[in-house]
Length: 268
Ligand code: NAI
Ligand code: 15L
Image (cartoon, rainbow, N blue to C red):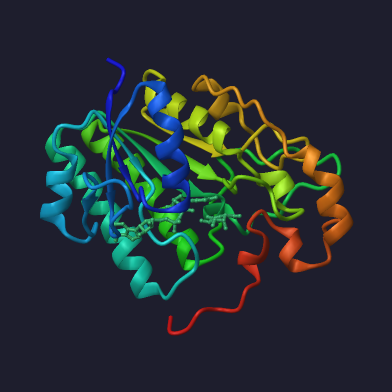
């Protein structure tokens, strides 16, 4: 049966806030969780994913989980380890114990961030390109995808790992012309990931139908996702302000953009 009750982790964050607004129209009843309380949502669960007992209680009785919680940018390894690696493990383990049908995991383009971006007539990057994380953050997403595959193979818990590009109200950089996912397309994709049948563990890229797209959306479309937006109307203004991407600039040459070249964050 199609899921109805859905736990949304990371509900206080940027993407969580956008999806809290958009997903109820698809008929979902959302249970919200975050480290931080959410203004105007007194029923939201305030819990740390590191707290196993709290996570187990939070997943009890839901049909599915959209897992957005975690550190969403590069950070010292120990912080990533607790929030993204241990936290995601705790969530999957609780989902298994409580018999949840499916997890939609917010992976990231940074799991494959060191993949050279296509140029000219190069083919789009497929989902089965070797993973090449560009940060400890990207490594944690690579781990999350392996965890999702493992819980499917070992325990029959289904997942869709969505390698999100950049999901914000509008694209704000020339790179984002290629990787942007409009919030409305984000909700469409999450809905498809929750309702497609027999997904096993499926990996998809998450973006709109951008004219300058870098990766292959076919596995997302196979779930029933039909993106409606394209960043191209923003191209003129952004290119006039920032210039075209320069392939000789390392921060412009890979899928992960500046994540590949940003200085390390200490302490490791
Ligand atoms: P965000 O940083 O705005 O939100 C993350 C939320 O997770 C925060 O509200 C934070 O309090 C919560 N959180 C962090 N650690 C937690 C813990 N230990 N226990 C419970 N809650 C915790 O990030 P954003 O942009 O909303 O992203 C959501 C998810 O999607 C993240 O996992 C991010 O890595 C992923 N993603 C987002 C992209 C985007 O374009 N927004 C692109 C690629 C991936
Ligand atoms: C991500 O994974 C981040 O969570 C988000 O804040 C953006 O930086 C995005 O990638 C991106 O690549 O633009």
